Image 1: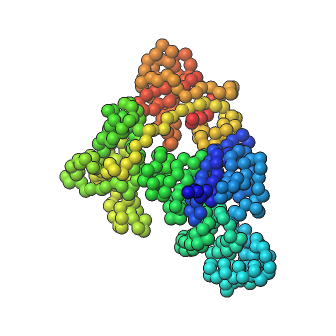
Image 2: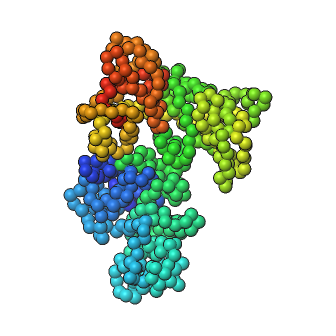
Image 3: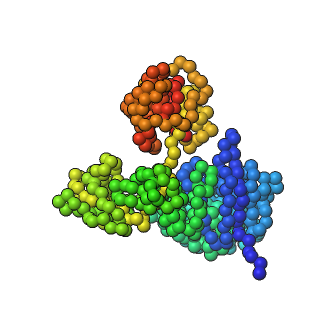
Length: 467
């Protein structure tokens, strides 16, 4: 029995700009009639991937196959118009000087009568037959979108590439046109690759989601699996708001104010993040200073004070300041639930709704101010922050790397002397504090992280590079 090849297959696509890999080793397969969504934040390489598949941009390496035939491998390259691939843009790209009929018929071949018949069929399918002789400027945004869809469908493409085509429409109109678009494309047995940065749109439309970050596909799978089995903390946060607890593992258990969480296979002493979504937080009332009893499924209740509550239409969002560390924790409740600020309540976290990930490590490189632009161009996902109240006349190219010497707070060593603990900077994205203190010999940079103090090197400039 012969196995049918996928309608679209891309293998190890790579695209570099200025030495930086914008698309890095991306591979996908899409079957006829399947909708795959390439989901990710702006700038992660989604649209570049689409342009390489369509043939309007050339990859540096990798292959593109359509129905088992290689159409591009970096050396041999089938022209875009011969690939049988349709492309829908975000801005519709209708020709303003052509009528609706002429726009739809633009890519068709055959006699005038054959073209006209195909145009009439498509415009009937998208409910625009009454506007067949109108011009684009006479149409609403939704009508222009449907004309662009009919034009893309006209030559019967085997593959449809869609680059955020619905982003310019209002929400109510967008839902209807999205559903209509999918119905028409699946009726033609077209393989669909949709690009979006909106998780809701991907969850609604896709049979498969490919989550992209920094030029790479981080996770692939059905929408349910990607949402309920995320590969890391950033994936959880991309799909929805999230809460996080930080803890250290001891005996395969992470101890927190909400009780213990299982961390199988994680070495003792390892720092982990326990992540859970606001809709999974359970709220209980205070009973004379007591909360609900601990359970195996929900763990221990932790006390928090309501900071604010808002009605969001289909749910209520409540923010709590937790007693155990003064952090803010979010919870959502269906319908209307608006406790007043200052009200004490107890929260629990169901164990089957939590994700345990290894914590991100923190590294710092101190660089001169004039080198920031180069660092950012080489490492665009990193964050460069400026340390306050520092000046230096000399600029070495690179001062110190991530710490290899760890000291407890207020440690005394022959070289550094007593180190005061007084934070000068606390970046929001890292659990770390920066210090500049004068030791017995010279000024030093320190990073304070998880009750430890690291010596980074001598004070030589005013920039900190978060690695």
